[in-house]
Structures are given as structure tokens and as C-alpha cells.
Image (spheres, rainbow, N blue to C red):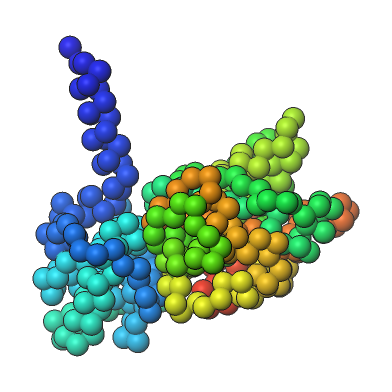
Length: 344
């Protein structure tokens, strides 16, 4: 007979396995990736990273270099070095030194030549598959609040997405049947990626907890969000693949000031949004400080920071033409790259 203690123990083991995600499966196959890191927790610096979809169910870390994309998994095998298998493993373990050693060794070794890939020929994986928290800040640009006729909030309005919404650069978002939703809208957003555990941090210290940033899109079904019997921000934001992120994670040191970055959105080549994070109502430091006052932000947690004006919801009713299957959306943020996805 299964006791409560047995049940809890089993549940804990299962949960741990699920949270480990891709890294666990990779570690079982790759001795170099399986070596547990126990050194100091360090944030990645001077790196632009992506995820490689290998087509076998694994999505592993890649590094953008002058020689091409370094396939971390393959380079670790070829050189016999330990390295984090995924971005989430890198952030949670803090093994930036191991990644840096692998990059330096691969760059200077002919043994690793085959680990450098042509970026134009690879398939992008998801940068994040199992973040502990996906936190979203709504209504966070001054002109966006004005265009939809709402007052600027006194504190950051928070909601969430779930892991089912996470999607990769160049993905196709499957739209639900029309009876479920049909008022689809884009929201290009800066994504904050946490690198250290943050609880009750000050605004002055908040950026020291950030590992880096990404381009993201808080894709939305406005009818689910705003036209259900009660306002449902979460349900309108977290259908499958409604959170594409990428193509890159860029370390914070390479980005500099996150509160002064240009954002753009194009739909089928037409410019729809063009503004700057300087229009934030709550800047990056304020968002992190406010959220960490209520719960701990952990390494690998991600924060969607709101979108500027120019969304379809802000158009006059007679000019609102909602997105449809076949449309291509490109979200661009200065220093972070162009995130492209289609609707299907």
C-alpha cells in the first residue's frame, strides 16, 4: 500500500524530473554535460546565445561567434569539457565560467571545427522551456495607455503566461477556431531574464540581478482578454505558442541601458509599432523591485515588460483589422535582433 510519505517522495522525484526538462535527457546521454557544476554562481557576460532544435526532441545551447554558431553540446563532446546544456541550466547553475572555457577552447582548436554551424541552416529551438515564472507587466507605456483610453496605473499590473505559450523564433502560432477567438493582436516587448535570486531588492540594485534580455511578443486574443463576462488578461494571453521569444538572449553587459531601446513591429512588411522603452511607465528597475517585493524572482525567470502604442486594439473600431492565418509578424528590438513568426 502506498503511504502518504511514499506518494510525496514519488511526486517530488517526478516534479524534479519535469523541471529538469531537456537538460536531464541530455545529461543521460552526454557525460560532459552531466557533470554537476558546484562552483560560484556567475552571470553570463559578453555572449549572445540561442537555442538549436536538433529535430530529435532536444533543444540545446548555441553561441553566436565570429566563426558561426557554436553548438555547445557537440563542442563539449569533441573537447571533453563540461558545459551547460541549455540557457536555463546556465542561468540556474551559474556556470558562466564553464561556458566561457568551452568557447575559448573551441575557438582555438581544430578539433571543434565541426561544432561551428551556419546559422542560416539551423532550426531555432525555444530559449526557455521550463522557466519557474513567466511574469507579465500590462499597460506599461505612456502612449499605449493613452491610445486605449486608460489611466496610467499606480503600480505595475501583473499577470502571467504558462509554459505552453513558449515558442521559438521562426515558429508558426496555431490559431484557435473562430468560435474560441478571432481578434488576434501583436505586442512587441522587451523580455527581462533574471540571473540571480531577487527578493525585496531596491531599484538602485535591481539591474545587478539581470542576466540579459530578449525580444519577445506577448501575442494576444483581445476578445478572450476583454470581451468575456469578466476581463481575463491571462486567458487572452496564454494559448499555445502565444509567447514567441528570440532569436537571441543577449547578456546584460552588451545591452547597456534597457530603458532606452528602440522597438518595432512589422506585419507583412508594414511598420505598425515604432517607439522606445524610454516611454516605460515603470522602468526595468522599478518592475524588478516591485515584483520582488511580493515573491522571489529566481534565475531563469522571465518578465514581459509591456508594449508601446500602435497595437490593433488602439485603432478606431472601424479600422481594426485583426491578424489572421498566413500573416507574418516581425518584432525588433535594438541590440537584441528580429523575432519572426507566422500565424497558421
